[in-house]
Image 1: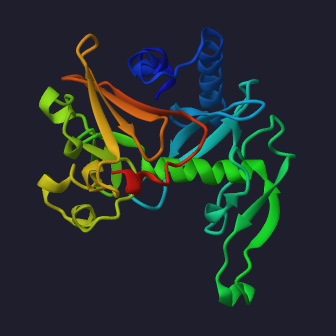
Image 2: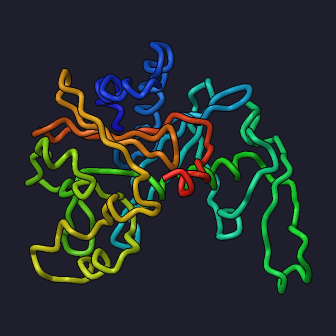
Amino acid sequence: MEASSLESGLRHLSSAGNTLNVYELTSLQVALFTLQEKEGKGKAFFWGRINGGIDDYYIAYMLEDSDYIFPKKKMFWSTGRFEFRPLPECNRTGDRYKCHYKTALCTSNAEESKRLFRSPQSDEEEGGDEDKEQDIAETLYLSSLVKRIDFATAAVPRGAHRLHGSKVIPAPEFKGLTFEEAENLSSWVHFRPAEDLEALRAQISKDYQFTTEFLQSLQADVPRGSWATRFDPVSNCVTVRSLLWPGYIAYSIVNTKEFGGVYFGGGEEAAELPFLL
């Protein structure tokens, strides 16, 4: 969510049971605008809050141009001091880090804290069946966790973005979703590089009809049934919630351009969900 619409967006998402108090909200708005001025390129967005044992982690991001058609999300993190710093980049190995503990994120001094993580390696790499264990900074695990959650969620209304040449831009013709569309998962897509074949074909197509059909639908997510929709008649708002990553929720105000999404949680994946559906 953008800093300018943070207060109204959180009000629409408060039905999920999570929000920010007055101190958090005002401090976060100032921190986001400060981040925009410091970086000097584009808008700063609030990604969410990951609960820690001692202190919570507030995550923000900015969109940067990249060589690929999708803009790159540059992530930032902060504790309760609300001074955003860049999250370290994760390589392919870093994406696979798993923590031994139920709550991996527990310290307010994440840059100096070292925790024992397990990085699974192949038998060829390790020469055996033993998992490789090593100490890594908590910020690296935090970066890996944010990346995993963002890839599985990041929901936006279909048609809100379009291809313009070789770049993704906000669609000026987007007027919002109708009530029937907003309650249908096929009208929601992931704002990230697609993996399904139809969306990939749309990315390379030059036909105008495919300029808004290049994103992967939530309806194609596995396991099926990992998203739930809800309509609030008071605010005329439809929300979609992730059951795979409890704490993520996105919203769209019916027949308007307003939409957004945020994550409030402990960074725990509902790995047992496929067996419950």
